[in-house]
Length: 79
Figure 1 (cartoon, helix red, strand yellow):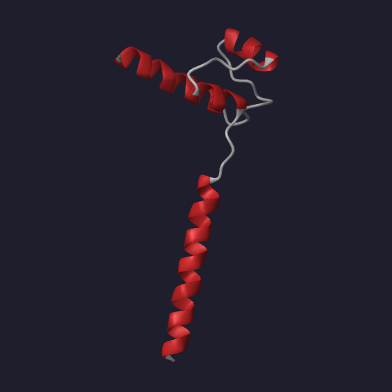
Figure 2 (figure 1 turned 120 degrees about the vertical axis):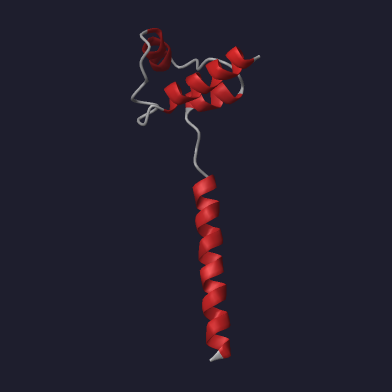
């Protein structure tokens, strides 16, 4: 009985750690990568969308680029 409990606890801990690792392994979009480098994205589709104040739906389906731009603007204002 004690062995089964230890086995269950070990399996649960391994699954938890695997879930945390997979959640952190999210790929950055081209705009998010540029924002981390404090630059503008150089993709043509992103440039035209950003000129109009919109998000490039091809590269950023969840509007990650607008979120990254807002964070960068807040940092600039705070300095």
